[in-house]
Length: 321
Image 1 (cartoon, rainbow, N blue to C red):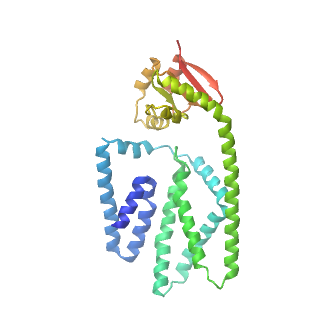
Image 2 (image 1 turned 60 degrees about the horizontal axis):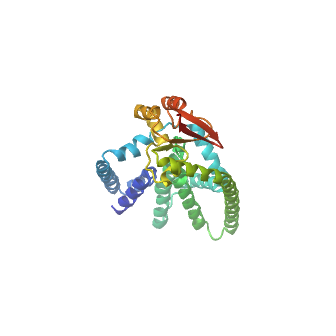
Image 3 (image 1 turned 90 degrees about the vertical axis):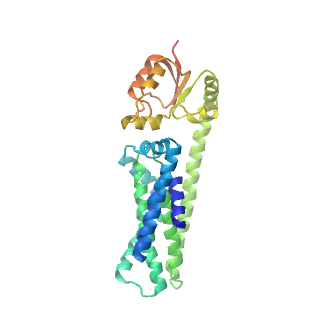
């Protein structure tokens, strides 16, 4: 039960955690004791559904809408491949090593089952627990292609790779010093590479932020003044709106996904745009035609009722007089 509580806490903190841990726990327990496995997964499912129902009732259906419905987004395979390549560039030695380790672990289990009880228990945990945890983490990592996903979908994959590397360091026989030193050398190279690559990325990011700093200060001033006149809309600059004290009125990406899923009608917002109710609208990039955030009817209304001023990577829209 304590394990269920911990796993439910993780799942309700981030919904992607609902797969790997429960899957590994169930398979491992099923191998050890079918009854305990059924108690575990039943407890996890029943308590999870009750908790979900309670939160959903308190939020008047908002929990289901934001956690489930709003996350039914389009899956784009090229995004999965791009993000996977980026992870591989940062962690090449770790990922290759873990793949080899998992294959060798499964192969050795099928070839040479151990008789020692302690070793067998440890081996069973690795095969029926850690291998299935890895499988779940890999499946979750593959969902990074869902529109709106980001690198946090790799968190469990990174965690399980760290566990495998730590386990290998523990299991390497003391007599095999050559193998141990080679492996430690590879990990050292990987560590240096991660630090160097991270430094380069951070410097590039800081450089971009410095270039945008003066422009963002000017935009923030415009947002702060416009909020005194009415509601301000934005997509990429939502942080400025919130920092100016206005609650979120329209979430472009989330409502865009709901629109294309047939779950949201933008008519009311289009009418407000036609009435020029919004004193300022900031749209990131150099075009209004951003399918992710602004529907065709909204774009048409903006073009007819707002003056569009293009600056560095942002469109500033003000009502026509």
